Image (cartoon, rainbow, N blue to C red; front, side):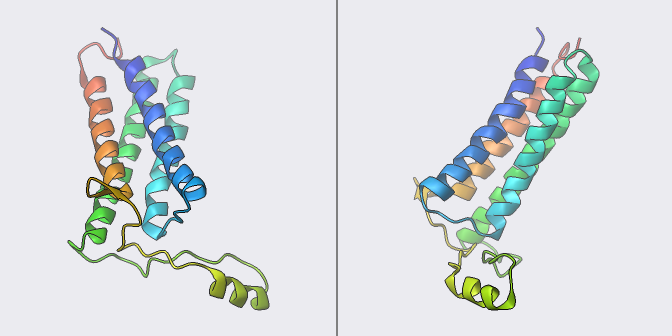
Length: 161
């Protein structure tokens, strides 16, 4: 059984869904991301690009599998950051930064106005949770699970045959 198509699909669907959920919670739910939230998004963006490259290389199974594995690694990195972020939110350990959103560029007069108007989004406070698990926690669990599933599919005998 060829498992590469399923692994490739998961490598695209999972980061699209999780990144989409992050943007929906930001723009639809009014939950501005903290710095560590952004850190979790970047590997998902990379995973999407790598998964698209895997689809583009469908005619070359080994190359497609390599891109899929790299996408899985990126998803897993996002999951690791999510687990770290969740630990900061739960007070298990300290975060690495001041954890506030940046106000952006502009003139010096505009910068002060933007700084004063920018809401501080702390990394050590979970703005939302379900069953005691924060968004960072869900990203960690889902991303790590998906990365393991994708790599597991790729490691099956005949995955790229």
